[in-house]
Image (cartoon, rainbow, N blue to C red; front, top):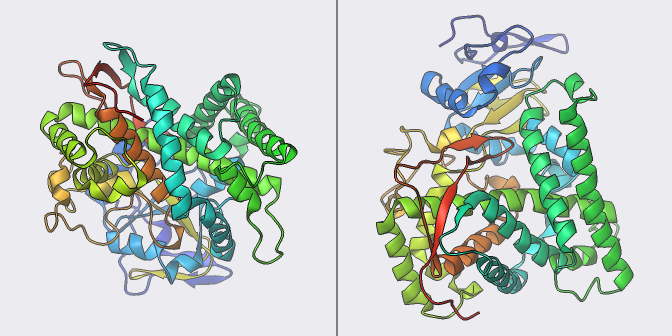
Length: 473
């Protein structure tokens, strides 16, 4: 551990001294530089640094996530879970990562906290209710079939980019009912990629740098404005057409939602914020998980054979439906193991609003907190052979990580509201793709994770080959 004096041993807040009660001092991670803090340990790849914190330090360790700030990284699963669930969760807001996301997404269900979050979550719920999910599955399957039809046998594909295209197609059809033309669709994809690449870097930069007219900031601002313009135009077009309550897509559902206090419908800006949140989070995360599943199955043909056998037994030659989701335990374990090994989050943040007790420490208001999902999910103390892809670890009674050790969707009242929607996307796309094509890797080829705003695969080139006759849709 770092033997230097930790800032957190003595904190002055509003003229009084706050010290941990019966707690050891919180260590500061080594490698910090004057003015820059841990920037050069975090950039260009924060994953090794975040993993090293779990190896070297205890339940809490102090880092400088942004120059001029201090952040406590919470590493104990029980403390992480406490941080995400009441009563502690009610004393926290979202913190620096979500401050940056708020610049992009506005006040959406992902970026706000407290009662405002609860109210927005209740507003959004109808779009993710069971009847809507059942209807979305048919759209997701049709989108996947259309994408499959464009794949040439023997072609070497960038699988993650292909899955991004498919995820965005599924999202635009479920949200916009195909109201985006091909040119607008391509521009939306390019702008979303630019925004997500920028966010990962911007969370490590001081506020004054983000105000400078440098290329990074100009690209971010242009892409953000273009995305919001695209979504706002789709909302305006739907209102003008008069089909807002009849089109059956997610956008029409959101247009029909009323504010629980005023009884008024959501404003166009509110709808835009929520749709943009869905577009970025849903596309990026779903595509990444799909790509990793296809990669791991290509590396483990025995597991792939088990999945195919299950699909054959449950589905036969018919297309997958919403009712099949609970009948595919092998595929479910594969997805769960990918969500563990290749979770898309490398850091999530919170900030104390009041003096808060966490574990044995008492933290003052304004304390930045963070936890690292990627490092947590690969901790050998929590998961035997953590780098081994092993869906069997999720057989009943085989692997029981402690609460707070597996957090692909978060926990508590801030658990991802779209988790069931995303799960249905994954099941529908995989059940459709795997029965028709197989992917192969070059001998000795491996793909490493890369951290930007989320953790994603590096260049993932794989060859696609037909598996059998097309499933009737």
